[in-house]
Length: 252
Image (cartoon, rainbow, N blue to C red):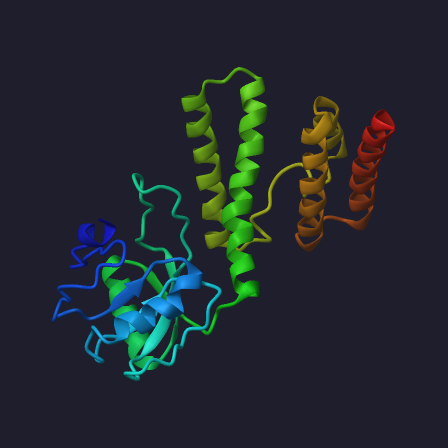
């Protein structure tokens, strides 16, 4: 649907349909589970002209697959979170990492540019690359869920809560693009505001406090890179350790 919105002629084929192969197809994109990519490429290799490159969207797999026809293959991994079939994410301005055989890369680049996306041609794949995407995409959702739980405890309506959280996350997402991730850090930790952090900890308990401490420790490391003084770092770390020790004493 997003491809059609961008004026790109694209056909979605679900399941294992292998008939009526379009003669004028310029690129075949496999958006299927990682473990099925190699087998599916081999099955489709005999059906499509060799001039049609195959690309997959798996961030963990190699880009090149040796097929009997010798066709060019590649990877076209969207750095985009697809959470719903009904509410598709925006593609314009989003990055797609492209890799593999030159012919496959060029076809994929043209397709991404038609969609309004941003092609990034780099041999980026494997667990380390995919972990970078997963930490941000999935970690931010987990953080939003914890924030939602706190707002729920204050009696906010779900629709109001979702709108508020979405607006906050969107404002946060703008800053790394404009400033870079380290200068984008804001809040009491990077300001060295121990009093506010201790007030947060006092207001929380149980697993929520433990989660807050774990996240705050991560923020502390980033805050050092952003210019937090060593003295402020020690004070904040002490407050976090004190909260952790207090939680342990309550459970012993």
